[in-house]
Length: 364
Image (cartoon, rainbow, N blue to C red; front, side):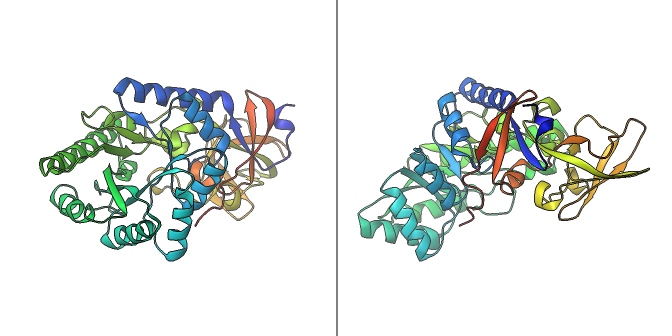
C-alpha cells in the first residue's frame, strides 16, 4: 500500500530514517566513550525503545512515572525518571515500580529527596538519584559548583536514597542562532558539570555519572572529558526545530503528518489537520509557523484552528489541488506524538503497518 492511499490526518514514521538516526547517535556516543540513555518522551513507544536498546543504549530516560510504567510493562527494566516527583500517590507508584525495575530518579530539593528517602526506607529500599543542575535554562536544577556541592552533602545523609551523579539539560541551546553558538552551549554544559563533579570528589563524594541532555548539544557535550552519559530524545525522528538548530537535515526527519488539501484559494490553502494534529508549538525563534510542507518551499503554515491548517502561498510554484495529499514535518516531534493514538510505519513510500503509541497521554 502506498502511503498516499492512507486516510488523513495520519501520523507517519519513516523507519528507514528512524533506524539511521538511532544508529548515528549510538555511533557518536560510542566514539566519544559515553553511554547513551535516550529520552523516550519523544516516541512514547516501547517498540522504538527496544530498538534503541538493541542498538546499544544503556537504559532509557522518561519524564513521567506513567511512561516508566508503560516501558517496564513492555520488558524494559533500566529507567531514569528525569523529573522531580511529588505526592504520596507518586511515592507509592515509584516504590511499586522499584520492585520490578532498576530505577533512577532526579531531584533538586530537600523536600523531594526527603519524601523519596522516607518512602523508600520504610520499604527497605535505596533509590539511586541524580541531582539536577541548572546550566542556564532556569527551569529546574540547582546552580552549579558550590550550591550543588552543598546540597549533595546534605542529601547523601538520607537513608533511603543513594547519590550516583549529576544531571542537566541545556535547553537554552534552542535560543542559539548559529551552529557555533550551539557548540558553545554544549561545551559549557559539559564543562560546568565536570567541574561540579570534581568539587564533590574533592569532598570524598563518589560521582559515578555526569549526565547531559538535549539533541542539539549532545555531540558537543559528549566530547567533554568527564561526561559519562548523554540523554537526547528528539534525534530518533528530528523535526523542523532540530533542522533550524543544526542537529540534522531535512532528509533526516522521520516523522511527518499526512494531510489532505480541503480548500483552495488563489493565495492560500486549508489542510485537514490543525492544533489537535500538529500541536500549537511555534516555529524557530517563536515564529508563527506551524510545520514544514514537504516538497513545497513556497507554502507556509501560518495559523492553526483546532482542525484546520491555514497555508499561505509565499512564492511561485505549483499548488496542490483539493483532494491532494501532502506531508508536513512538525515543529516539535515530541508534542505531536502525544496527540496521536498510533502511527503508521513506512519504508520509503510503502506502508508497513500501524503501531500504538502506548505511553501517549501518560502525564502523571
